[in-house]
Image 1 (cartoon, one colour):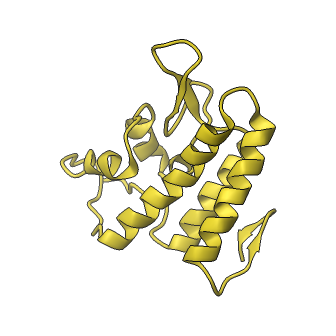
Image 2 (cartoon, rainbow, N blue to C red; image 1 turned 60 degrees about the vertical axis):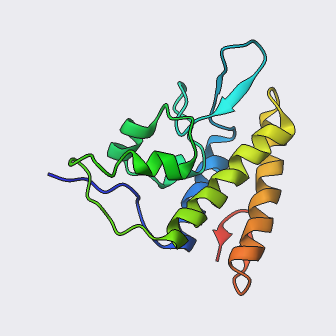
Length: 148
C-alpha cells in the first residue's frame, strides 16, 4: 500500500491547513539546538506541535519527516525513493509554494525568538496575511479562517 505525502496539492487548501493548524496549536514547532538558548523549527516537535508545512503532510508522511530540520524541498526529496509513498508529480510551482509557506512559520519564530508564543502567533498571522496578499491577490484573507 502506498501513502500520500501531502493532504492536498491545492494551494489555497494547503495555505489554510498550515495557517489554521499553527493557530490552533498556539505556538511554533521548535526544538532546542545543541547549544543553549537557541531553537530551530521542525516539521513536528517533541510536544506534537507542527510547523506550517507539517500541517499539510499526511500522518504517514509526518512520521517520516517529523524530526527533519531541512527546508521543504529537501524534505520532499526524501520521499522520492521511498516506495511506501505515492510519487505525485511535483512541479516547480508546488515546490516554491511549500518553501514560501515554510518561511512564514520559520521567519515568525526567528523574528520573535524563544519564549513568547503569543508574540509568535501575532507575527505568524502578519506573515501569512502578507503571503496571502501576494499569492492570492483576488481572494480575501480572514484572521480567523485563512483564505476565503
